[in-house]
Length: 144
Image (cartoon, rainbow, N blue to C red):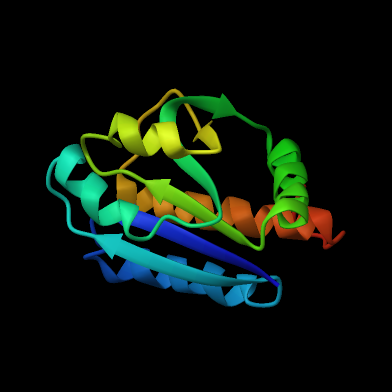
């Protein structure tokens, strides 16, 4: 079973963000093991040191200059990764983004939009898209 780790700079303070994340983690449990690791927000250089301790497997850095994928193409990527690696790590930066060193280590730089999202919301969006990818790949009626 694929292990999915989401490294996040910053933590969720509001209950509604935690509830949304927990709902998607529960839904994902039938498809993969999901772990969220939070690192304290400071500067990208200080965050880099903490993030590097948790990097493993196929690494996807979320950044605005990354590649944009449709949900279908993201699902295809999610179907292909376990053929190469049993671990997948996503990295979500804080307010100042990710350090260039973290982005350079990534197997893929991924962008969800040209817009900027708060890291709390991005965590929910990412979990939802991972869940959507699994439903697409398993022919489960969720994706429309």
